Length: 390
Image (cartoon, rainbow, N blue to C red; front, side):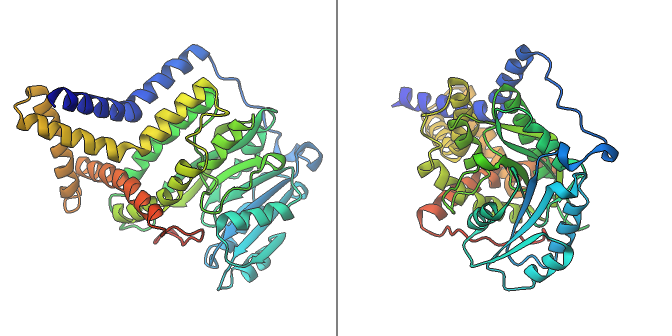
């Protein structure tokens, strides 16, 4: 029994360390061998930028009851450094019961679609079908893009192998009294650094919904429960395209104002993510090259298996200590207990190390909670804005 427990502990602990730390180090080593990155195509100054020099783009915003922010979003889109004649702004209203459609029209959207409630993905599908752009870009109603963000995304498609490009989101506090939300920035900053490394090596393993674009001919119609953030990159790769990260394409969003609110947001996202993992094709290696398959395994499959790996490591180390294990296992058990204790204390003491521990534990727990929600049939295609982000 003890040899089995040792194997279970060291295997689970090793996989946790690999997916959280080792994978990033491995990517850095690979990138170091690749040499300097090729420069992106230089942008054309505003005064010389004409419609004939830029491909037509349709910027699509799927919205459900976003009347409070949609006018600002349209104004932000119309101020982008992109020829107006080549930019089409489409708002796809997903079963709105407020004045989102009227506000979008008044703000200057080129097309406003009033659709029955079907979820974000089906609203996006309808907008793409109506669009005229060779490139279709997507954003959230509460995400404001940097002036040159769209141009940076479009420049990525100068490479004929690129089918999908996403930018970066920078989070701002939702309120002056928001507590402890900077821990999400710690996590997200690390994730973006990984994304940049993945893009250098080949293709990214996930995107984000606030700022991304695809070639219209590469656009995929997916199950409405699955969304684009996780499903698009790996499905693009399976079809022979590259999925890349463009760090100079920047959007900003308000952050969920509490760690507990962030937990609820991650839980909702993970409920949709599990649909992609278990029946969306992510686990099938068909269409992956060896390198990308290892990236999916390291950054996605093992990351989502982290709750189970933590449980195995904790139970195995506890049983080994009860059987008189050596000091290494004892220390490992104490460390696991210390993280759990720090997480609990982080709910009452706003000390940064405690808050980081709390953020990590709740993020891991959200993965398991999302799986429960999906298996129990509580996941729907519709969505509601996270509290405090509008």
